[in-house]
Length: 148
Image (cartoon, rainbow, N blue to C red; front, top):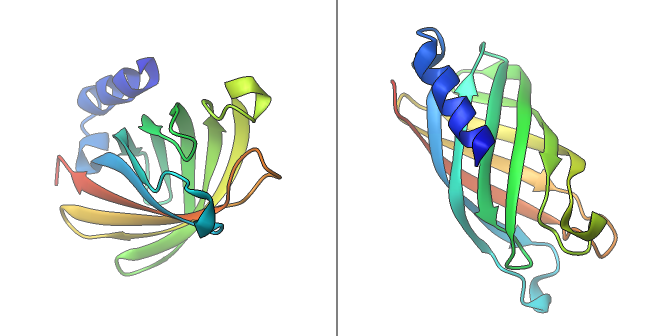
């Protein structure tokens, strides 16, 4: 939660960052193992603050696959761009997965593509499975630009 507040303060303090400050309500996940009763509706709150056309900071929290609260902090590196589409990865850290480091923080590399209109956007990410500790999924994250 502290990371989310810090990112919001940075966004408000920097006129350049105000061009792209995206808020999201969490994710919808389509798990690769669909028959195991995982939580697909991962509600939460997140913020993404653009630093450049290629890089943005992100932080937030959500109800994860195991129905526990997870927090995240990271950097989107999206070097491939054509029109409103871009591709790259989120590089950062997550916590809250009970079988992964007893719910503690762990590093993550999450391939991501994004569509960004003026006010609405969509991130689509591939969450790789890590044994039986983190379950693989395609995650869909709607986002709204609060400073178009």
